[in-house]
Image (cartoon, rainbow, N blue to C red):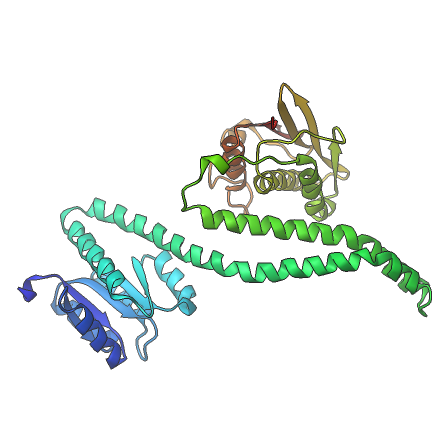
Length: 389
């Protein structure tokens, strides 16, 4: 009976690990454990192996080398690795190159490993019946695995981000004492240039620390959003109400350096107070920063001095309209027709995801998104958002 079952080949240079693997799983699966890569390749050459599970760090032939050879010689074998989070870089490389379908974290738990191996054997069985179905299954599994790694990394980002936020708060406290520090400078022996430079820095401290805190909170909200992607959303708590004017000002401040490099000015045209809108502050910040950055880059690409990016606001019939206009290079109709398509971009360093994300976020908030452009004259992006009751 044992010989008729699919073979699971386990590779680990530590004898204790091989014994535990065999004794823990031998009643459920047909297991063969070997100490190194060459021994594993010998088994692959003489037997049909359903699942190959290998450690990554081994003397001689590494797990990654073994996986590359196994993929070439036995592409139908389901390949997996046993690893620790410290090995995330080679694991990501192995997943992206299609060397492995899954990774198993040390120390593994038997019930979880049993489920993973059962899945792998089923996937191997699919490969014998339908190659197309097998390919789709592997691609889906690759994306799911990358998602789980991304989730772990997102979790790890929170700690340094909280440290950054604490330091931003400390700088804000320092900014409150800027007038006192400025008066104290009058009694310190400095050159005129040194004193003027320090006074300039002190006067900028409040706005700089405020922008730093806002950006840090925005990043924290983005990370929280990533962590919540896999959780069901409570419709009762899904509506957000936001004052858009502080976000408009923050987007202008964040993009100011980029605009200066491109010889552009960023302007606001609209009322001194705007109605609150039904969209989260984090999502509106994402949209406006993306649009203002795109405008500044378009002005820089044109190369003409004194370019302008304007954010124009007006309200009409319980809706707030925000237009981001630039006098940059503009877009021809064939490019305009594809703008907003994921992964379509006209810039070598771009990803093509910014405008697609903006459209999605505005649409999810119940708003409208429109782009108009003319080559040589510039682009206008209009977002219309529902005003909060």
